[in-house]
Image (cartoon, rainbow, N blue to C red; front, side, top):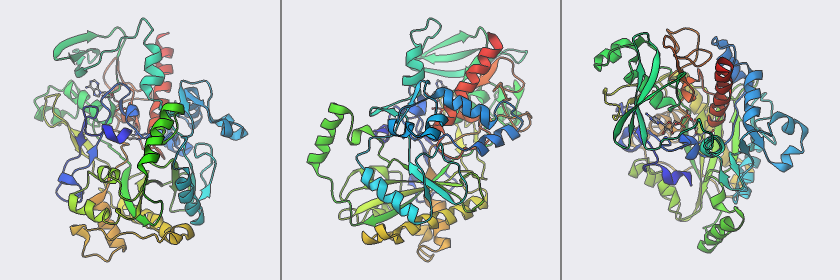
Length: 518
Ligand SMILES: Cc1cc2nc3c(=O)[nH]c(=O)nc-3n(C[C@H](O)[C@H](O)[C@H](O)COP(=O)(O)OP(=O)(O)OC[C@H]3O[C@@H](n4cnc5c(N)ncnc54)[C@H](O)[C@@H]3O)c2cc1C
């Protein structure tokens, strides 16, 4: 189960900078930015939701001066990656036609043991005016909101990471060699601003690897700008302040950081009842026998809700999901372990007797921009992550709107019949505000916002080296033979989880490389 790997050796264990003002309901005033430290990266630790995003998202990428990234091209590369295996949905013509069927990435629907609870939430959302659709990747977004059972990177109860789907099958090729326990400390750049290799710490031994054609880095939204800056590519003044000779002055390296925020709204209900340990044991046996039961799916309910404030929008502004904790579980304690103890205990105080629905809320297209910069020139020191949630006040205003919409769930017939209520939370910074008022929610968002783990944008793709880092072909501006292929190149966040778009980026980039060299 993915959460059990957080804060272990499989996690880079990044945290955001504590500014002493925001996130003060969280331990140390920081947001934990879990990132996968293993083959497959975050795809080996994530929640496996498969969401492509909307055509409009990629239209904005294209509009930034990136001619290859039209919605049509992008969709072709999604299809190239996909192997859609939900037999029931494949009978529907539009769904079958939208998804690809020959790619390496298996997409299916979780065989969830909590299906009844997911149905309950979806029915209630429908009651609030969301349209229920069979598949969020196929439905056209028009109007207030859509909700659906979600698709997953999972096949027969097992995770489909990029290691499993792309790397492992390629290992038998003679031109592929994988080194584990290898940490790249520098990209080597010569005096002609050409990348010619990388410096790597392999099990404590410093080694150099030379590139025949070019160097490609795929180290993710945090490590990619860090590595570029350590190698002398980045904002000149900042590099010099860290005693790093500037090889190429690229002011936008580390800038443009965006993330999907994560606000939890607790709702207590009389049902479901406590979990029986015999059922839990039986679930383990079920997993071993036929890959079903709770071990076969993510802890989060397999549903997605996408909605907007404005009825005429053709893409969603907000996303929501849900997780349910039965009475008296210990898993809720673990799930909320990033929250300060007094705040967490106030959220959990009825959980000994009642079920706790944690409804999550996310702003999909934030206006706020953060930045990643070096702490020191030591590659082993974590860079500083200034996430700057709500740096732009519009994100706070829209969060209050979205959270209030979600809270209406307690008044829907199903939740009412279960005596649903939002518990008063002990959050010292917000106790002076009227409970559930706009100012209360504003304060709540400021102090309890965490991450949906979707940071992007720190090596932005675009035309102009003054406000981007890589070009349409993902080549670093001003450096020869150096490409970036990961989530950091996204100019803007997409309307949903980011794993699918990252795979699409990899597919398009591989064709660009083949077109150049073959
Ligand atoms: C907890 C969590 C839950 C998520 N849930 C979902 C979800 O349900 N659905 C979804 O679509 N998305 C989800 N995401 C987001 C999604 O997984 C990521 O957006 C995506 O995997 C990012 O891919 P990437 O290649 O950019 O970076 P990464 O996956 O971070 O890959 C970077 C790789 O580079 C390695 N690396 C970094 N620096 C160095 C170095 N210096 N030397 C050597 N190697 C290095 C890292 O160890 C890692 O293996 C989640 C992410 C997390 C962390």
